[in-house]
Amino acid sequence: MLHHSLLLTTNRPGHSEHQMGTTLDIEPYVFPGAHAWLSKHAWKYGFLLSYADGKNTKHCYGTEIWHYRYYGREVAAQIRSSGLSPREWLWYVHHR
Image 1 (tube, rainbow, N blue to C red):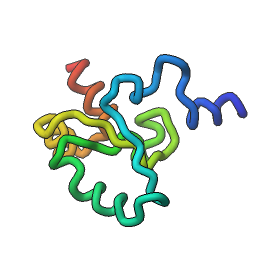
Image 2 (cartoon, helix red, strand yellow; image 1 turned 90 degrees about the vertical axis):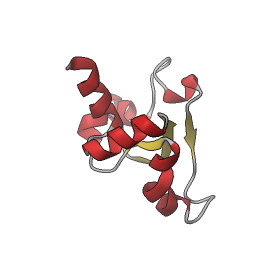
Image 3 (cartoon, one colour; image 1 turned 45 degrees about the horizontal axis):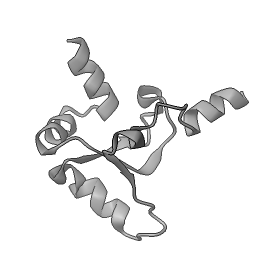
Image 4 (cartoon, rainbow, N blue to C red; image 1 turned 180 degrees about the horizontal axis):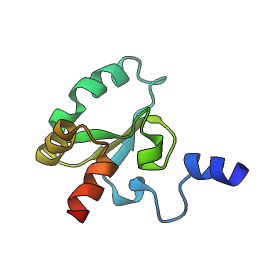
């Protein structure tokens, strides 16, 4: 059980989106109001929330409302309009 809990909250070495240089964490407690603004507008600038609430079984991590990854404006718009999480969308595109 502890091992499973750790896998939901901790990246294994070599598996963090941060190592690509395309991901940033914006702490909601440090920047009040940022989460609400980002959830509405980040996709317009090419950023999407990687680990959204309610998608844990789809993205394999616990919810991280601070974790945004850059995809570019066009791809972010496609992912957003699909209704899928970024990970689901990338899986779908790769396997179709």
